[in-house]
Length: 423
Image 1 (spheres, rainbow, N blue to C red):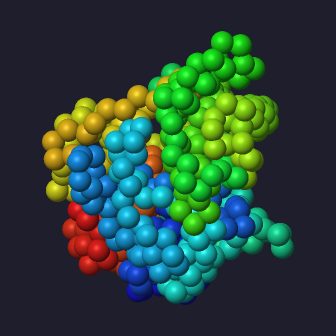
Image 2: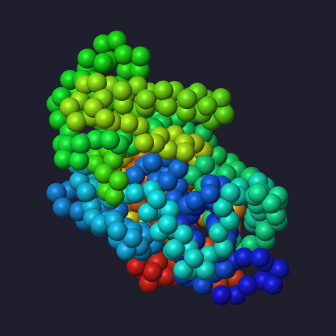
Image 3: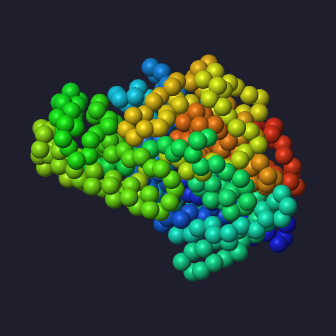
């Protein structure tokens, strides 16, 4: 790996969720010296910050699970297995999609072990507060942590923040929400304990309970089918996705109202289960997660924007750097998700230019911030796919440094395959 002497790192990654982990490990395995900055005190992204305790997008839809994402994601699953989770694909009875169920504490520890193993410099409790740009290149970032601010110089950067924080600070243009500025609804997944160990959910009874509650309840439940309710591994708590909220903008006031309303709804709904559902008499609310589950914020401009038509056709490309297999899942209205299956072979390719910033030559995107129109975004935003696009971004950033700012798609694809990615 060729380095300029004055650079502190070859690659700086902003965000420690699935995409950031994929990027950091991908870059490190390609030989880069990597810094990973994360605002929380732990890694994991939505899985650990918002209790989204299922990896979506690792497998295609169908009667049998067909793996769509390998590489770093596969390493994460293997690490989870080493720590006691089975990591097997589980088919949701509600959606029919294949997911991998998680435990947040096991996941946090698994990520700690992985980044340590690959020699990645991780700085937690740290935000990217500013960026220095010269022409079409980022030169450095300012990291703000518990000990103040620190200026970090690097050759290449990856925005895996989910909110386009680095792209925004670097002067990249962006849109908020869809083309009309509408944001997808939020969900506050909750964990419920104190449930009979052999309890099986009577979904028909649950639907009847919800229907009666909705006649005059304080917080009508939009998921009248009972939502996604699954027994978790390890804790055996019940994981319930039924607290849904609309949000109109990205202001702190809007998020504050959503967080408080979500917690009120969570307590109300657990009380409903205790009163009306056999086996829940001793139930209690274990956790609502450090924050509400955010599906959408900013979309920075990329050199290519995936379209819903390409997703519907299952379009494949010689410049593909990742497979995306999760159906288009849109939450335009709280509690009423709409799913549209992927056509063709059941997956589509994310082309290389979809992970490249439009006006910055040394900034790559991973996860929710890659180039995608509102329909395509409904597929690419999930964590399983984020591992794949993040790993591609990290490898591409390292490859560019190694090749003295070259852009070589075939080299990136070759290195991804060497790392076990499925293209």
